[in-house]
Amino acid sequence: MPERENVKVSLLLEDGSVYPHEGRLRLDRSGDQATFRAEVPNPRRLLMPGQSVRVRIVGTVRPRAILLPQRAVEVTQQGASVLVVGANDVVERRVVTVGDPSEGSFVILSGLSAGDRVISDVQQARPGSTVRIAAYSGPHVAGRALKTEPAR
Image (cartoon, rainbow, N blue to C red; front, side, top):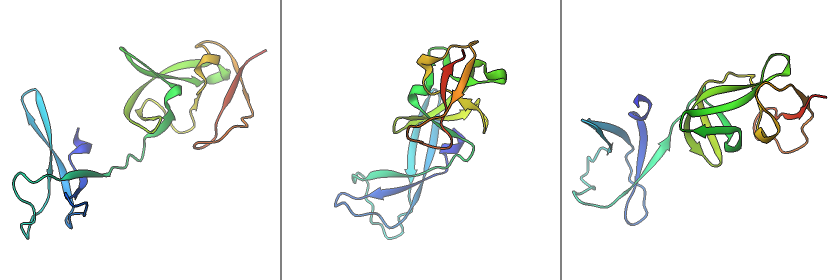
């Protein structure tokens, strides 16, 4: 998890105020266990041993990740996959690597490329079937949304 070892954190103190120094999230590995630890500077000794604080993760950016609605991703014991419209408008299953869920969506870390046409209504399509791309009139979450219909 190297991308998580340099995540910025801020602290919320018991009184609800924000601690004035930002810290980093560190990963400590010991055998089969892993522990996350927030390391924060304490130059004025405002933090005391045993003091309760809340740790807020400031955020990370994954520039090459793709966000898909959860309904478009099939997750089984074998892994995750999505249906895409491939060459000649034929539906194919694509294995993907799924990251953290985020507000009804999955972060797709690998397995898709920009421009891939992902089918979000998987009940309407089956791998190997031919589909026709129809105009989509619903809300657009990000980019261009696709609606598929069985080819006639």
